[in-house]
Figure 1 (cartoon, rainbow, N blue to C red):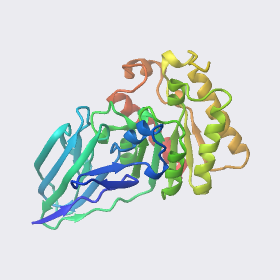
Figure 2 (figure 1 turned 120 degrees about the horizontal axis):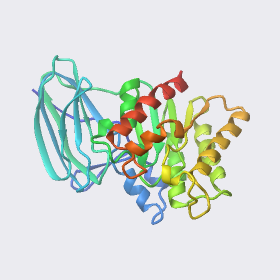
Figure 3 (figure 1 turned 60 degrees about the horizontal axis):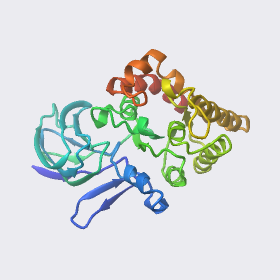
Figure 4 (figure 1 turned 120 degrees about the vertical axis):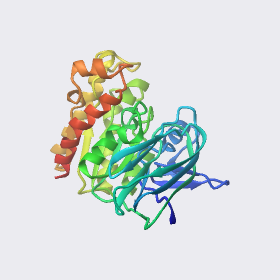
Length: 326
């Protein structure tokens, strides 16, 4: 038997603490400006989309770590099928048998996508085991809690994970619950990351926090996209406007703007950049991703989709994003 440590993908960097435990950082920490970005840094240290794989036959997987009470679980897949969903809340150590149909099967571990989390051990012990490097087009999905997907039952059921698995893409999930505020550190992190396609789902956090007004929102979106475009001149960028949220559509926030206003301003910025010659910039109307009835049925808190809602989003967005890449 050969014990092989995990080799992680889907993050910007890994921070190893004094006791050897690892945290997975999805933004470049040099771009934080404490204390104003403390909440952003907290979200960026959650391991959404972070995963490792081994080519192997049957063997033993060991996962040890510490998670907050609200930490999402681990998902363990064999050749794309979920075989174990393991709790990550509290101090834990899982030793599980993984049965694979062949010596070349792909065993994957997806880390908890939400909640404060530290990993102490992740190893696979099996004959002929070797790390599996990710393959396929490299996709980064930036967005709010609706991209972070706290409400998904597990890390492989977030809509970005479902799209990535359906399209055969390598995922970088940059969903930042409550913190999708067009921060320079997010644009700079995307600029530093080698990518083949980028999606930017913007607007809902700006509405909820009243972070930008009619005077400032369009300029912030324009600047963010421009920073990303300078670093990735040939990469398709897909801007996704906010999905429907019935109570917010026509209700002014503290700066007097409705969600309809943020959606329209986002579309206007994309249209202007396209008029200026950006032929690889695309826009998806988020209001068309879920129907009005689906928004009522699948958004229990009127804002966040449930697990079935995220599956619907993935089903609708996967072909649109694939079309932008081709």
